Length: 199
Image (cartoon, rainbow, N blue to C red; front, side, top):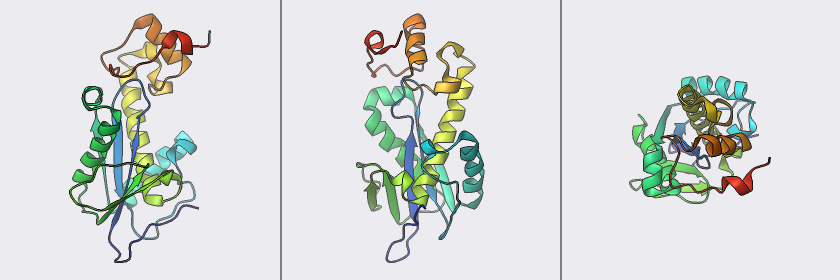
């Protein structure tokens, strides 16, 4: 069961997570979520471990029940300019900045983060499977980015983004060999398509 995270002085805690770091195309999405104390739902988990239908159900519940939530996005051009790690941090900063309620503490999924305007933070490896607020952020980031890639698939159907969401699947790599890169592919990402394919 996921845990609440509470500070000694009962400050509001915002969980932060991203989706799309390892993709070959499209933006990286990040979410920041402040949940009410004691929030619990039996289906809430690391979004990667959840069924799509459960993620969509939890998205609606989180957006309804959260004290505050926000999404931040860095597109493929920003990723190419500042690299994917910094773009992930920047997307989180954008999400935190958009929160209507200011948190007193940030809980970050992962092992690194760039300080945000003096707000203390703690990095937690695998935090989206440990703390409710990070898991909630992972759900919003994942479902937001999935929706974006499904919509983009309508313009570039041969890459299969409606199913692979631009991750480096065999079908996506095959499509890159056949069609080349789209305008939304990350030019800074290098992948030896020929040696990594299963023919």
